[in-house]
Length: 256
Ligand code: PGA
Image (cartoon, rainbow, N blue to C red; front, side, top):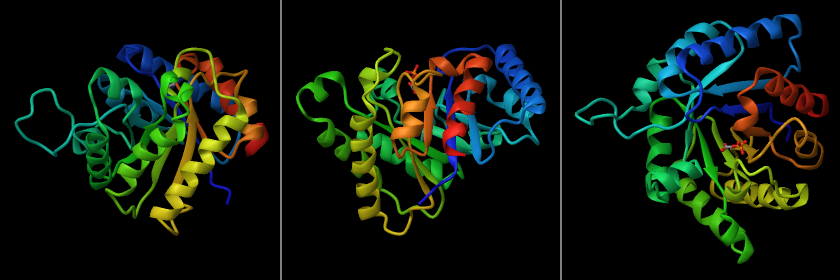
């Protein structure tokens, strides 16, 4: 089934509040001149600090805003924590969960990722759940095992009655300029779809599966043309408005 495309920009620890807002202003200006492909939703995920100012700037437009992480709980004595409730209040509609940088640098395990997905859904945020193998795991033929373990932990934690997004992000492809071939990526897309279909039957329209890892204006066509992913999650190449618009346009030329 054809699901509307989702294009997610993950700005990581880049862009001041001023720079994030300036990106939003420029993006809106450019889209006024040329609205680009229809049937495609853009989600910008700035730092938590830039979330509210960017969401404010984009209010009333078709562009959505997401957070890069959330913590458990709603309100409470948890110094430094940001809950789905607070992120939603700041204007987020989506939240990235279980990005490999958080799994590695902040020791987030499958249980915590699953708990965060539950919290995101409770807090009315659409989780974008990242899964993917390391280079070492791929070299040892463990891609399927790792992705299955990561995704099944989430699938067993919730029964979605609202949208959930998964992103296949091979850890070795992130920020490296290397990507799997279309057929390697497609194999994982099929695996994920099968696992989702088995655990959550009938949710086909609610669950999108994205690809992420060194997507840029050159590699985007391959994923659009030769895979069944419903969109992409883009880091480095999403920081520049021109580059980001090219990615969206090229995807849209094939898919929308
Ligand atoms: P990249 O990052 O596009 O810079 O590889 C993707 C991601 O980490 O989500």
